[in-house]
Structures are given as C-alpha cells and as structure tokens.
Length: 326
Image (tube, rainbow, N blue to C red; front, side, top):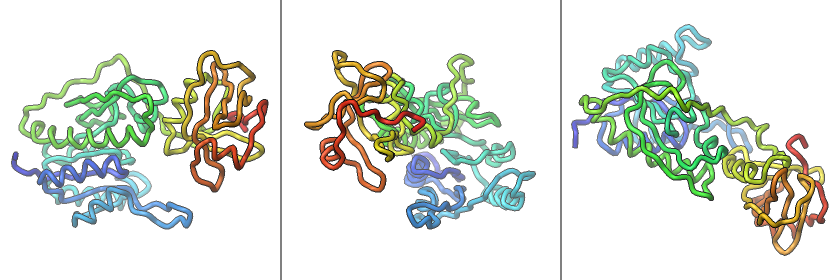
C-alpha cells in the first residue's frame, strides 16, 4: 500500500460519508473533518448530526462545523478558526464531497497538493447541486463520478479521473445515489496516491456539453399532468426519496412513489383524468400517453401498493387529479 497521507475532509451527507470511511479504511490519517452544522430533523425537529459527523466521531476524528468559510462573510470567526485548524493540520490534501458550503480561494491552497472534489456526474454535464436527480429527470443513459481538481468556479476545475455508470430503467435518486457513492469512494481511494505522486494528469473540462443541476425545490414535487407520461415517470424516480412527486385528490395531497408507462394503445383523456381504477389499477391520462400509478402515500400514511390505496380511497373513472398548481 502507498504511504498514508494526511488528508483533510469536507463533506456532509451520506454520499460523502461513504468516501470518508473509504479513505480512513485505506489507512490515511485524517486530522480534520469539516461538515455542516447540526440541523433540525424529524417530527420533533431535534438537532441531528450529519452522516459525515457521525462517521468521524465514531472513528475518533476531529470535527469542525463552521457556518461559513468566508473570512469577510457573516461568520468571520468561524472561518478564521477553520483556517487556523486546517493550517495546523499540515495536510497533504483536502478532499471535498457534497460539503454544501462555498470554498473560498484560501481553502484550495491549504494543503500541499491542493483540493480534490468527488462529483456525482460525468463533467461537464450536471455541474451543481443535484446531479443525481437531474440525470434521472433528463432521461440520461449514463452518468458517473468525476474526480476533479478544485478551482474557484462551480465544478469547473480540471478532471483527473472519471468512471461511468449505466442508468437503470428503475433507478431512483436513492438507488443511483448508493451506486455512485460506492463508485466515488473507490475512485478517491485509487486516485489520491496517483495524484500526490504526480502520476495523474489533470485535463481541462470540455467547453461543449455544460449543463447545470440546479438544487431541487420542493415546489417541483407537484405533478403537472399536462407533461408527457415519460417525463412524469422520470421525475417520480428522480424525486425519490426527496421531495417526492405529488398530486391533489379530493382536497388531499397524495405522493406518487412508483409508476410505469401505460401501453401505447391505452385510451386517451384529458390530462389528469382517471382512465381506469380498480383491480390494482389506477391509470391517469397525461399530456402525451398515460401512466399507471403503482405506489402511493396519503398524508400521514405509509407507502402502499395502488390496490391497497384504492381499497381505502376509491377513485372513480373520470375523476380529475390535481395538477402541478393544485
């Protein structure tokens, strides 16, 4: 095994936790972990540590949770403390994965070999906050992981390594996340020693093909039945588990967790109208084609198969389901 390195780590969600664990398991010293402050979560809105913080504490690693890293920003004391700690850590490298805070220029030079980012797409496609969801929503045939040297732009730095994954027809954001997290962990463990030893050349990102994966907004959850059935089905998978796709029914919000395209020969109808209900079927007309709804959830309830849903909440053919603005 190559000599262990002193690696600082900045990340917050489960995607990043997997990479942190892999670097630690590979024998590298991790003198400092940065992660976002604890956030309220759950029905009781109790403060909850990020997955990265939980992993770091379980391994006895030092953790800092600055509210900002901008020395001239709203929390200069937090930034100054983080700067001092990173300097004292004498890092060979800083690894960043889904941290969620802007990294100013000084952080990119706080380690001898700079900062590397594990990004969940094949750059330059899907720069930004939600590459996993946007790849599914767009119907991409493949996505992957890019290991990137960080600069001050938004996911604009030179690329070091990339590995592709084929998107499955049933992939949700959750299932694709798990596959990409594992791939990202493998890529960073393989790439770090090669980068530090100078065996991994950096190449600029292509100018062509740049797209941006904007952060998911809760307002996007509402289904617009005027859209093509194929587009709605992809969005359902892209928004599982957050924020979930939803529609209105009898004044209630219902979440749709799983659907499939109806056969092309299915009868047509006004977008949002129920074409068939019963015997485990709830078929809804869309702007183009129709969807068979397979798994639903009422407010305060649990996810259930459509047959169970209809037993407790019958839907008559011709019923109009709420649109995106319901």
